[in-house]
Amino acid sequence: MNKLESYKFSIKFFNTLEIISGYLLALVIISPAIILLVLFFNKLLNELILYIKTFLECYDDYIKIFLMPYIMCLSVLFLGVGGKNRAIEDKNTKIYQDLDKQYQELLKLVMAYPIETMPQINNIGIAGNTKHNSIYNAFAFMMWNFIETIYDNTKGSGRREVEYNDLWETWSVIIKTEGTNHIEWFKNNKNNRFKKSFIKWAEDNIE
Image (cartoon, rainbow, N blue to C red; front, side, top):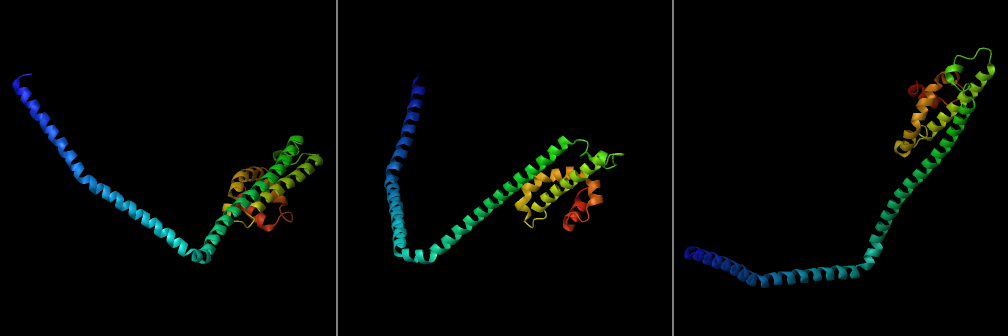
């Protein structure tokens, strides 16, 4: 390293040292101010906590007499809403289980009497075989009673749609499928077998 480079390096080193010294000096100067601020805010926080504690102690009776009833009412309200939702869920679960059992029984009949319960054959009748027609007539009546039961527990129940929406989403597919399969029987046998509100709904929604 020649003398010029050595001189430049010395200048740079002392400049850096001067900057560091300046930062250290500034830190020493402002440190008391930082400490004072920390102590001030700490004292302020302690005083605030003490004030709140004193307020609660002084107005403890007021809080119990005037605020507690409102707090209790809000608690009861939230518990009531939660309890109602739970009751709706339990009711829908019970309805679903009952419907599922009924539909399983109907499917067993289809498996036991595959020809007699087939609407494509029995709608036009089986020549000379009144037994098949009588079995289909009974089966179709049972199926439409099942569809009406679904309707009674959802659309015809008087409940808000949000309360039975999950049920309807599940069973509306069955209504559409089975209702369409046996629609001809319904058209010919609906009067005096089903209530008017259900008949109107079925005519408007099942083809």
